[in-house]
Length: 389
Image (tube, rainbow, N blue to C red; front, side, top):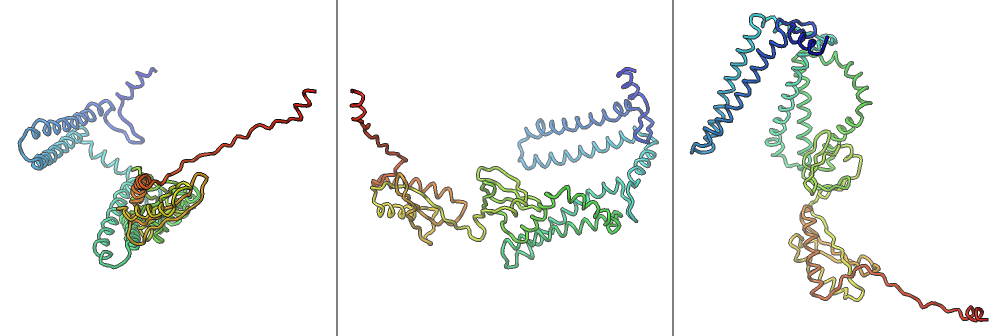
């Protein structure tokens, strides 16, 4: 039998899926059901496009009114599409639709796992999906409500408030999932043994995942960092955007988003610029030649720090003689700024002023140089006399 004959036999023979037999062929399903459904959706999209481009766009009315008309029109078209699809499906299956619905329902409700009074079927798994979604939605709403009412009125630290609200959120989500699973007929006590056995196997295979979740709980409890902190991790500096139970979202200074597993944040050292205080010290290193007046250079640097728009008046800036280098004397200007996010702007501003003010004051900034001393060649007189004899 050739390939064409096999395809023809499949298209023209009654359709069979598993143990279920249908009274129509695949060819009939394609041309009488699937193709009309596709044409209905194409016509729906084309109508919406024509209404927006050719009817609503030329109208000289407010944009808000246009959008409102478009939304109502789209709603009416969706209802019409639903009615057409319903009529098409019922007309295609005819009087046998009740038989198909009953057969499909029996397949969906047939249990493939039984533990005590719990009967797990396809419909059970399908019902669990909206339960998880509703549990997550309920947890988010509860968190927002607690933040806006109870925790907002309490005089507690922002980090503690964040920890409490997130613990409440995940607690509500877990409780809602357990209640929802009980409603759809899953006896959680009868599945405890199964979950225990699966937990052992999953624990070995998903050690990193479990470690990340445990690390997330540690972050919520100990608060080594919080949302909005400027941190340095794995050589990348950025702001903490969102802390989740498994990972943390960080936006770098170059506007790149990285997802860091929580186990890396707990197991490694974190440079947190704003753990308890947003103020930091910025250091401007500069060298002056050995012939320069150090007192004058120090006064110039202190004057620059006092004019720095990012600097704090108190604590006062100060200058340190850091080291005696090969090319010059290294000075370090230490300046307090109010916000860690302005660190690079403050350093850049001070460097520009150092360059300008040193030129005005006649203070030279040396560049690396090496002095090479060449000695005169040594003439061995004895060797010459020996060679002449």
